[in-house]
Length: 116
Length: 275
Image (cartoon, rainbow over all chains, first blue to last red; front, side, top):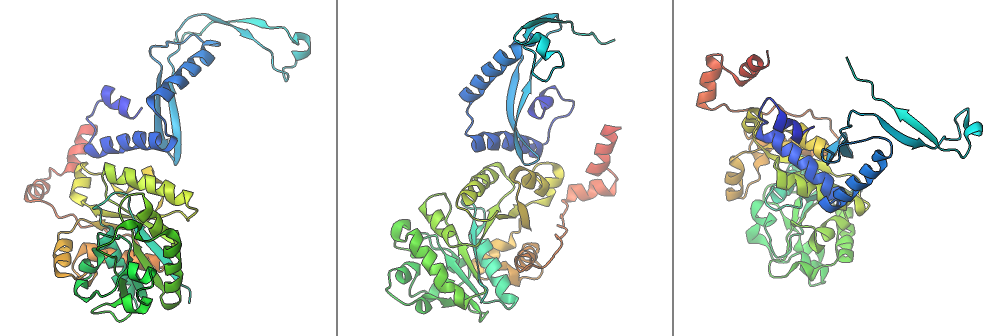
C-alpha cells in the first residue's frame, strides 16, 4: 500500500504524506539495519517456501518495510497464479487420521475456485 | 532535595536545543524552581549568549571538572531570576576534554542545590552526546517536523534506550501551522506516530525567537509570543501539571483570507472533490 497506492492512486499525495511514507520506510530500514540485499535474500526464501504449496508469480512478488502501530512490519505482496496446483502434504500429528497416515506423504490436488 | 536532571538533545544540529534549554530553564525558574542550565557543547559555547550572560563568564565546565575552580565559582547567576544559574561550556577546548565519569560526578555535585538541572547536549551521537546523557534522569528530544530531523531523533531514541534511560519525551519545534494545513508539512500526529514517544510540547515557528536571541532575552518573557507560551506550558508539564496543548493560531495569508471570505476555503474544496 502506501507508496504503491500513490502510483496507482487517484489523488496526488501532499508533501507531508510523502514525507511520512518515506520516513516510515527509511526508519524501518534504519532500525533493522535492513539493506536491499538482505531483502532480496528474504524474497528468495519466501519464494522457495511458498512455492512448495502455491504457484506464485515470482516477478510480481513485492517486499517492503513499514512502521505501523509502533511495530516494524515487513509487508509481502505475493500474487498467486490462478491455476491448478499440487503439493506434497506431510500430515501433522494432530490430524485425526494421522496414525493411519503416519510417515506417508500424501499427494494433494487443489483447484482454485474461481469467483463469480 | 528531590532533584531532576534533564538532558535536551536532538541528534541533528540547528533544530533548537539551545533555545529550548534556555527557555525551559527560564520558565522553570519563573515558576519558583531552583534551576541550573549546563552547556555541554564544549568548544561551541552558545547557551550563554542565548541567555544574555556571555559577558559574565570567568570559569567554565572544564575548569570545574579539572579542579581549576570550585563549582560555585563557575556558576553564573541569571540577570533577572535569582534562582537560575548557568554553567557555561569551555570555548577553547575540544569535546574530549571531559569524560562520562566526570560528567556524571558533576551532575551529582549539582543535585543537592537545585530542583532542576538542564543539560544542553551537543549535536551528533558521539562522546559529547554520551557525556550529556550519562547523568540524566530524563531525556527531552527536540525535533522539527521534517525528514532529516525526525530520522535523527529516531536514532537518538534508540541510543537513549540502549543507555538504559527511560523513554524520552518530544518537543516538536518550529512547526508551521499554515504549512501543515496546506499539507506541506508533517503534523504532530504524523511525527508521534512515526517516533512512538510521548509529547512534551509543540512550539510553533516564531520569528520573535531570533529577536529574543539577538537581545539575549529568552522568549518566555514575551507574553504575546506563541512560542514563548508553548515553552512555558512545556515547563509546566515537566513539573507534572496537566496542561492541555494550546491551539496554534494560524495566521492566514491575504489570499487565503480572501478565499475563506468567498467560501473557497481548502476544507470546502476538499469536500467537493470527495463527493
